[in-house]
Amino acid sequence: MSSISIAWIALPFFVGFVIYLLPKLDRYLALSTAFASVAFALWLFVVQSPINLQLIDHFGVTLILDPLAGYFILTNALVTAAVIIYCWHSGRTSFFYAQTIILHGSVNAAFSCSDFVSLYVALEVISIASFLLIAYPRTDRSIWVGLRYLFTSNIAMLFYLVGAVLVYQAHHSFSYVGLRGAPPEAIALIFLGLLVKGGIFVSGLWLPMTHSESEAPVSALLSGFVVKAGVFPLVRFALLLEEIDPIVRIFGVGTALLGVSYAVFEKDTKRLLAYSTVAQLGFIIGAPTVAGFYALTHGLVKAALFLTAGILPSRSFKELREKAIATPVWIALVVASLSISGFPLLAGFGAKVSTLENLMPWQVIPMNVAALGTAITYAKFVFLPRGGEAKVGTGFWAAIALLIGGLFIANIAYPEAYTIANIVKLLLTIALGWIAHLLIFQQAFVKLPRLLEGFEHLIGVMSLTLVVLFWMMMA
Image 1 (cartoon, rainbow, N blue to C red):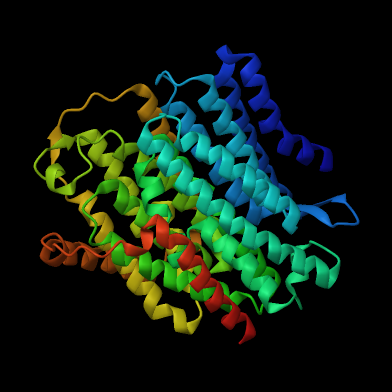
Image 2: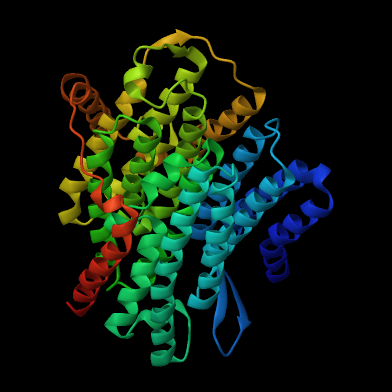
């Protein structure tokens, strides 16, 4: 098992190098690697027992592969495969596919880590690969957005690295369990780095511009699984140390409410999806015990929505309400929107139910408000006019079939969610969301301030978040 696991971790980086040598096979090699990760993730579900790998004994560089990691790895694999299929006939160069598969491999590594050093290396490689994909069009705008992301990410990881060193100083180990009894400032610094990388709460407000201004397939990668590389360690911390769990849940609630507050008023499709990503990340860490399944369903939905948004005739909802979109495209939008809203027969229903059932009492009201906000947000897609025409390639439909098919298949993973009470509750939430959209939010012209998204404010927000985190750790 250990040999297979190490070979799987190394495979994407080897394939990324081979793609440069054999550029004519770029798409085939990249797609095969993604499906290899699908097989490995499914194998983790079959094995069940965790696989622990100790690579460097003295420094505690360790990896752990278990069903929790399996959910995140499967998300990464399916979204990567869908993006490669989507881009199959797009004319993108071998450089794009090489960076995509290197990004895939580095995210897999982040999902496998259980120590701070290897996680730091994985997150830094993720930053570089993401920057190169964001800047792939080589326009002034894409390069600026990529550099903004890279600079913010690197500053956050400097905070993280200082915290990791303080943990080692206290315990002579970089293992995650070293957080127990670590100095409060060490935990605060590590949390800050991961909150920024994961797009959590105000420290993650770099996310809306980055995800909305990137090309559709890159947006799908970023929202589908890249930000989860910062979220996953927080989930691990919460499950390992019960004293960390309430802090993670607090940020989950705050993030969910912040994201939907912006999303319900947003008039731009890609910015709406980006803000919704912020909100859904809050749901993932709001109930760490069931985070894996929610991460899977969110990754499939968000990748499908970003890929579909990329072929719409406009990014403006005002213009889309005046231009009928092709019925098959509208159906894809509706199915994905229903899933993320928690509609039965789709995986989002089970994910929403399991999350709401695993909340602490103080979380119930705000997280149900966030669920209602999600229904309001995605009603904007559901009520778009249909019946127009669109020339869409086979690559798009194959990618959408993979993602939405995954939502139907994953639905069988949580059959106990299907009780009358759960079905009625979520259907009522969706109905109320749609009514609120039609009567209130569709006509609303509220524009929330974007001051904290400004590049000049991102570092300042990090500093304020660090102060809050230090206070929470001391408390």
